[in-house]
Image (cartoon, rainbow, N blue to C red):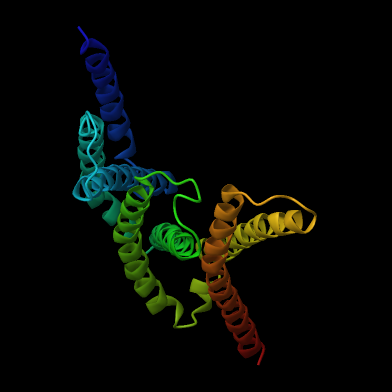
Length: 277
């Protein structure tokens, strides 16, 4: 029977999980216990959000007029993934909250790490969506979609991708940003010096800088090619629009995080000066 492999996996996985759960429940204050629940919570959220975006993406395509054979066959994969991921997160959520609400330093770092990861995820999704929108507008007003070699369904795919990324990413970024600003605005050096914040600020700066430099190369290379006699092609124009859109988003993000890094350094320096006095 085709169900035998799934049943065997279910039996082995459930047995191992119950054995593992009984062992970790004996030590509820260890770092491994906290890390386990953070990992499981993140995995559940990623699975639920990914499958939710997948389902929403296809529904929006249907509302925009997309009709294909076996269009809904993907639900046999997306719905089980959504249900299982959501169940895993909801079942572990009470234990995750209990582990992160203690007064230990590890619990505080766990709470901040969760907020920073969610904030960076929301910012990334929203940034990709807005860059995609800018690219669509540039291509629409600078050249026709046919000249750029776009198919008739291209605009529909890009529109539904933009809508889903904004719906998911923007609320996550706004909610977590408000929570983080309420803490960081106090200029508490303990908060500022936490390694999750440093990774968040400087890691984002590095990633955005690499994106900006890469797109600068993509933008300058065809211009130099034109100057040296290369012929124009629609694919080159599409690449120029993409690099412009990505740079238009990367630049303000880089400026924002550079300012955050400067403010953090100033707050730490002021704290050292006050301590010395």
